[in-house]
Length: 354
Image (cartoon, rainbow, N blue to C red):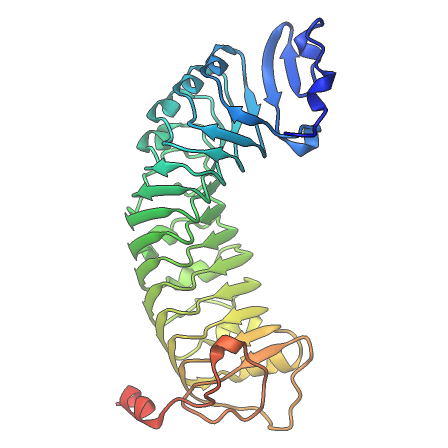
């Protein structure tokens, strides 16, 4: 990049294996780290030359971040020993080559934060040893292909333009991190999710997913469950106390009573749904004891909450009850987008009960 003196250390009269960011085994280049700040690199401007395919022993190629433009050359598929390919936070355009499936030793592919278009090549799913696939923040479209690797642990396809439904066996049970947020995906996911019991992070937010949320998923070792802004419907019934710190089910079509099993959640977002009935006392108790930091219940059809009007909400906690079928017993600070109306119109509440 302009102003960098990084390449002033490259003495072209000496052995290239001594260049900063270049790593060799004997006299063959096995790694190029030409954009990783941890390697002291400044990032590159320009295009990837197809001659990159001649580095036949290359196992690692990293240009993160940089200003690489143009397409990913087909010649990359000639790097048969490549295990790690990261060209994220650049300006890559065009499509991901179908021939990338020829990289049978590939373990990590990170092309995130570029301007790639076209589909996620189905051939990527056939790379048997792939463990990390990160393609988020591009302009990819089309369906999510099935992934055959039983070693896949991280899959991030968020912030693209992917569409269609996901097949029940698309993801292996080995997945620990799954993010499909901010796409145009539709259909049910309950049969998909019940198989992924190794998940520790799940974000399906801002899509058009429908159907129920399986109660079993609340027992998975997830640190953050993000299912907001979809069209999930029906009751939500965890099978046991929920140990997930953050659960966001807001802006869906979920209905029925709120389960007391949510009382062990630290940040619970159930707002903008169709929940009805009384707020469980166990949630109130946890909130007043400062065991719950956020309890958002606004814009539902809830009919009551047992809480002393003189009770003081801990300063570390937030409770919002606006726009339900009750007069909120306390004045609590709600987010601005909750609006100014304290209660839902009586006609709507009577229609819901009917």
